Length: 515
Image (tube, rainbow, N blue to C red):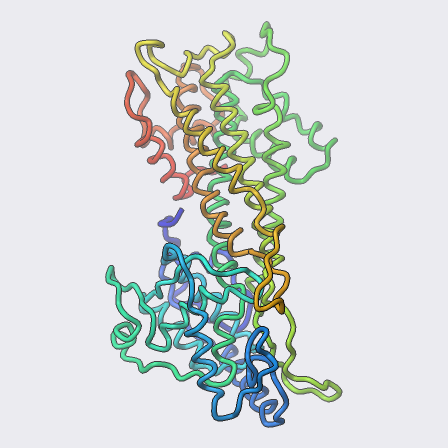
């Protein structure tokens, strides 16, 4: 779901330590918005580094600074080896497998890492952030395998692959080429970065892959959900359903926020329909199927799930998820370097598991409406079976429903929560992991399948609406219909539906449906 329309944006995004927005993440990751280190951000970094230097001079054991990592934390590292242990950390942790992450995800991950460091609790020098921003602004993108994070001690493996590039190691993509890390730095006219105490750990010990995936998925999910509302409204009128289920009093009686919001939007889309009053009387149908009648309840619950996930993600976009954290020394506080667990991904893992379930229901109820449209089981619908121009001679959109069903079957597996099964790591020291990265990676796949199903419903609903002519639906539905018809013509004979589905899906990705 990448390659969305670019939005006009300011000349550059300045990192000051303030939270990022989902829109800013998308503009940098996909739109190429430049990023700079702001004055306030630089001051935070300098103060944090000074605090860490003060703590180091006290010669106390500081986790990950002058000790080993994970279950090796009891091993003390000598002053002469502080740089080497940070470099070794990056090299040893770059052990990911699987396909390379898309460039937009890696760019979002680099942005979130830089923004977190700039909040001034990680103890790194400004040059570390500046090097990360140099990658973003030059279009040099590290090659990062997608698998390897357990989502609890930070997204260690993926972030280590990204950090390799700063050392002149690993590989990168630039202008369609794959370069070695050394070649990439030559292109940028930079020497490999020599990491100081704690800087290697700070580069990899955060939730930045999870949050990057989540931010981009939520940006796309907004567009998909809007299209799903358009599809639901179009289907309701296309099969001559009643609009009684949208009565505002019904939804006030339930009191669920998402349900009320969806009902209001569906009412607005259908408002002004000539089709609804045309069958208001003498229609033997008493109630429509759940896929029509309960759309506000089902899609409203999904909207509540999406909003829950968005709230968690937006808070993460202002977070520091490093360990240990470095605070400025203050009277009465014994420690300025505090080892804790902000790297744990459970808040995001639960949010993405919820998001995946919510989106799966968006597809599931859409597939049921596709089935209902194509079954043409009621004479009152005034639809041909499978919306075929000549049933029997032409199969129409029969197999489009099969494809929607196949997508929904895949979604059943993808919606199984990733966060509920635990596997321990680091010799038992890291004994409860979130697997939030897996949940977030699944969310991308979930969104792809949901987009396919919603595109199929829009294809079928637009075709079914033709059978109700010359009557017209409400202006909102008609606008969505015209959007579909801009890329897909009415069926007068059989032709492959796949190109039509892909064309509508591209419209969804561009945010062309205003649900």
